Length: 381
Ligand SMILES: *Cc1c(COP(=O)(O)O)cnc(C)c1O
Image (cartoon, rainbow, N blue to C red; front, side, top):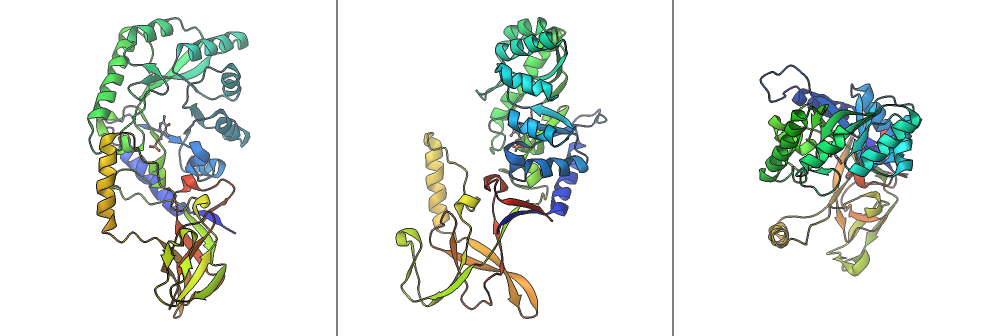
């Protein structure tokens, strides 16, 4: 049996750290604290939507954000009462109704979404809470930043929609160059200025995701939306000492000795150099092991970048290791064991020659929780 292990102390450490960083608003009037909105989409980044959300709330987080109606409803069904923001704008009536019934704050990023929300508010004779979504160059959700007059005209007509916030989203905040994020930020602030000139309430302003939050102090505004930073799994250098959350726990299921010149795994990608003791571990890419983020191959400059990186990498030792907890002398300790051959859907074979490893010994694998099948048990220790 496998589980994804989440260390509570490490997670607490990250939450504490992020709160501490958020105390610095980057402004001189540094007194109004920044609200931390915890993004729990994608099964809570793999940490389990409900246990993870509850853990965050127990540690002082009171504002969550999701990407789908299903996630929002699951949180309410679990009796979670925190504020919840639905990050995606939707103009599908059924979805908006379900969100409103569950007291979820809407994102409104189009005339259609606005109209549906007004229609439902009128039918139910209620006020509907929403954040405005501005598209500052992502091309996904939101009113296009250039269409300021259109945004103003739509919002001037509002009757029952209460704007509690206005936000935008970075497309490239993790990138080492910051020009595009700066540009998006300026586009966003220009829209805000026009809304203010037209006496349209903007509510709390937010644009930063984890990378933006950590990198750009002056863009923290009134709130930040944090996902990956809580897991300490960032696409930027981890200068704040955030801890990596989540590892896959399994056990050695079989052990055997292979002769010299024997092939291991699909495609015969590995041939033993001598007699080799190997252990089987029932984990593979279906468990999220060694699943890498997609590569953008459609831009010429990316292609070139990847080719250069691959050449550089080929000089480094690219071996993967599994850590196996075994008895070494009197104490138990984790031993690094090299993965041999290709990774299977549910299997890896590791070298254990000369190590005191037995069937049943515990195995620890570094995985990104986001890629771990939601069927696998989440174990908070
Ligand atoms: C996923 C998401 C976030 C969080 O992003 P991280 O980089 O994981 O912090 C913030 N805002 C929106 C709109 C998102 O979709």
